[in-house]
Amino acid sequence: MPNIQIDIVSDIACPWCAIGYARLEKAMQQLSPEYEFNVQWHAFELNPEHSGEGEHILPALARKYGRSEEDVRATQDEMIQIATGLGVNFDKLQERYTCSTFDAHRLVKWAGEQGKQTEMKQALFEAYFGRAEDVSQPEVLLACIAQVGLDKDAARAVLASDQYAQTVREDETRYQQAGVTAVPAFIINQKYLISGAQEPATLAQAFKDISAEADQAEKG
Image 1 (cartoon, rainbow, N blue to C red):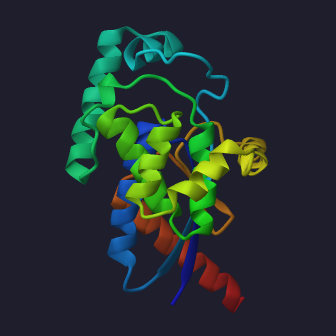
Image 2: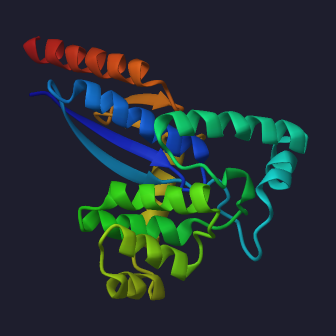
């Protein structure tokens, strides 16, 4: 059975990353009888310089992109509809505040070593977009840890240290140098880049094409 490696570059604060993974899941489910998939998550920070108090998301995005708050709200309304159709909780998408995601990325790395990387990422998406929780706060992060069934004391020790900080920074540098400037970005078999939250059918066809090309190359 062909194996497809999917490296996902994303940020916990990116709504399209949550939507993109939900669409990816559907594509993988469609192809699961024919293909095996291995998913790895990689760090990207939309707001790497964030510090201090968070800002309400609507004025923050309006200023960042030079748009009105009404335009931003309309775009977010569309994302809520898309997410709802995929079964993704975006209930508090427009009530959240900006925050640092660096420590969350560290815990995603740690959770990956416990075989719970995707579950942790999804728990963080739900905390931020579904409940408008501040995912820079240790108690929020530890609640996500408990949600996925991992050891809170071990995670607390990670947060109290600088473990995985270098790993996260190296991740970010590697993919920025590779030309990833927006997320989500899906790198397939360490060779092909798919940018953005593509529809499941688009992803499924891309996986078939990539696998067929690899098979043809093997046959020479």
